[in-house]
Image 1 (tube, helix red, strand yellow):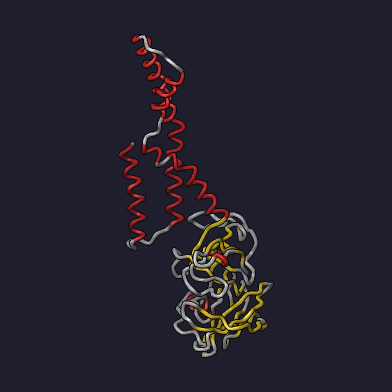
Image 2 (image 1 turned 45 degrees about the vertical axis):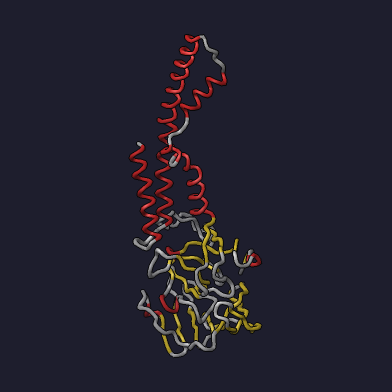
Length: 318
């Protein structure tokens, strides 16, 4: 078994290494699921086969040791006998690295798959709400529980609302997770013309705030407080960026969108959502690559649990 276990562990390490160096496209959810299954099988085998076998051998060795000690006229103490048994009961390395890790791995699997999943903000598309380097938590059950890996919905949960910050599988490449704000619900007509957001013919109200200084670009940007649904949040606009949408992809149901020099107007199809970043002129979102289907939803982002550059960032957000 130790050679088989060594091969299995080497396969996991090889996959992780290939993922790290960009040789393969990694899937952490799949990797964690396989690790849970493999270590779970070893854990069952340990409880049902290997542990009883070691216990039987340990008892036999202890009896042989007692007879040998008595034959030599030596002393047999409970502590010495227990030490002999403990040596025989000790798990081999290949069970330590499989069955021994199962309780930890299954706890992480359940927590990450059905309760909360951590993410790191990789880009500035959600500035000023979320900054690069923010470590956030995503609620996995608000929108309904889903099967790990397959992402098939198990429970309905609460439907996404306008203004929610949502993590989802990037439609053009579902192996990637994106984070944006829900702007359009199924059936909505969303217009973003001349940098003004309108939903179903009603302009979304926004109030100008003091300019935002972006430390990375060392530049100031116009900042507004926007009321989207019942969510008040801040957005940025860059006067140096044009209103039209350059480089929009040929995404599914693109015929539901009309592009012009002023921007874009889209009718959100059933079972889909229109997403936008809060950094409106520096966000590749539904304006460029289309609608997010319900099956791609991962969860609702709600809490910054760490930012090593600024502990003041820790806390909830809208």
